[in-house]
Image 1 (cartoon, one colour):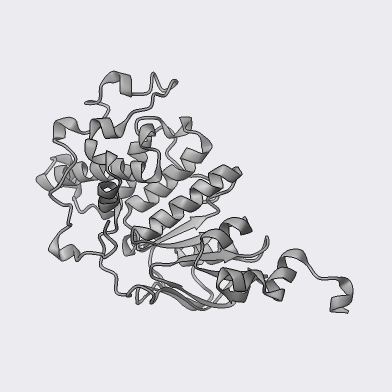
Image 2 (tube, rainbow, N blue to C red):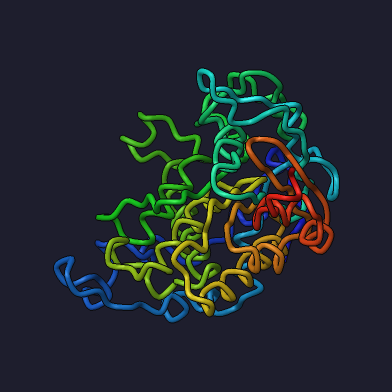
Length: 333
């Protein structure tokens, strides 16, 4: 397993290592018919490890999935900084002078009651909104007016509260779409299928299959996204985000709609992602999940930061308890 990013100028460690020849790639043209969805109605599981035995080795899968990016910040140093960020919508102050860091290699939880400003904070980090005042600095670079697609290329990936998948595409195709964020093939190169285009296409399929195995849904590779169980759709969205090779993975309420067993599985997956070299930001309402998986927690209330620290410290903070449970009337009299 690799947790140290490599220099892209030196070439990817896995750049010349593929899971098979062009004839062995899983595509709608080359897979045996029994492995494909039946008319888009009946879905059939496929054992990717049977197609490519390398995927049966969790260590090799982790090595393929591990980030291959140059990161300025050393482990433990700030990767993303919210610097006195205020976000106003007309007369509404959604974020009020919010400052905190996300450190490389950690799982940071961002929590707060409904209306606290979590999603606004999340959207400000990922370029959906531009701060009214203050700035977001990512890996030493102020994001300023950076476009959303450029932010993805810089290394910030996210999932959404409401699942956003390409429903008519297969699980593998959804993940391959994510890999396109790192491709350099020109339009003419794609049209005429240049050597670079063919190499990137092959690498995308290799990485897509490995990512599906990594998040635990390799057997769903050839099923349409809309036919997947809800929990697997959540995992697929995480796999697609990881396909962009992010430095920071932002998860927006990934446990929404999960039962207790699924939440425990999600905790294990989030730890696995961090252990593979990623930094994770987690927004989640489930306090048990947050306190059980994060390294640090930041708490918002009415757009302001009211607490920051270790999970045990934050859960015992009177201001946090009051924000979630309220206070007696006589306490504010």
